[in-house]
Amino acid sequence: MSTRPPRPKFPDLTNPMRLALQEQRAKVGIWTQLNSTNAIEGLVWAGFDWLLIDCEHAPIELNDVISHLRVVDPSPTIPIVRLTLNDELLLKRHLDAGVRSFMLPFVQTAEEAKAAVNAMHYPPRGQRGMAGMHRANRYGAVPDYFTKASDSLFLIVQIETGEALNRLEDILAVDGVDAVFFGPSDLSASLGFPGQGGGERITEIVNKALERVRKTNKFAGTLALSPAQADSFFDAGFDFVSVTSDCGLLFANARQTVSRYDQR
Image 1 (cartoon, rainbow, N blue to C red):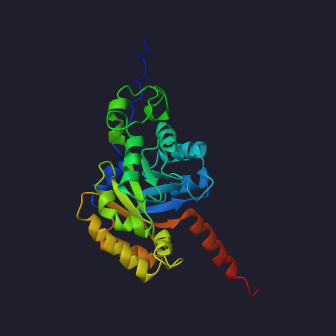
Image 2 (image 1 turned 30 degrees about the horizontal axis):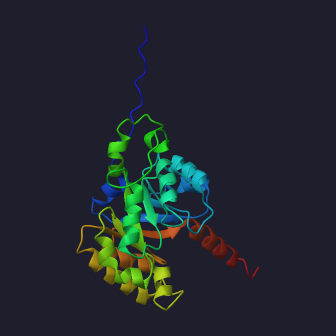
């Protein structure tokens, strides 16, 4: 008599980004905006440690995020989702959809960071709405999800303005904020020199801000606009850095290819 095949084993609810950053090796990432599962499927097997699915500056909606996660999940690359804004409803829907690691743009104050933490966690820690069946708990198949969900989550808040930079210590002090992420382009605009996010001035400002993060137990990431800037960020000691994007790889190389034949 044949035996019943073993029931599927579900992954534990620890957060992969947190575990990776605890290895104390800088993690190399890529930004994705093309909204292409085919492109993402190729990128996650290229060797990047993490991949950012950008819902803020790209036409990527909730169903797209779910499709991307299904492509990323079998790979060694860790997915992070950047929402359009720090919003309780958006967080709830993406949490239920199975997003574990979030990046939230334009967090200006400790109060805004606390609101995000509150929206991400079930009572009594927060006020995340409870549902019995959703993708995050494998449609009810993970019975202890409600008690362990917090362990599965990782929150990155973006420091993108001079105001946020001035309040960095207050934001870092918020329990539940796991990491901050410095946005060089928006920071350069906020500080009065737009379009210079890849320059030496903003690189120095961001590296100086890292020294303030290092006085805490929080992680720090940023985005590099050139290989030289990426080297500077890695040398400074950033925990995770985005070094390129799917759009950059495609369109920059397309223009370079065309330029080779301009004189023919």
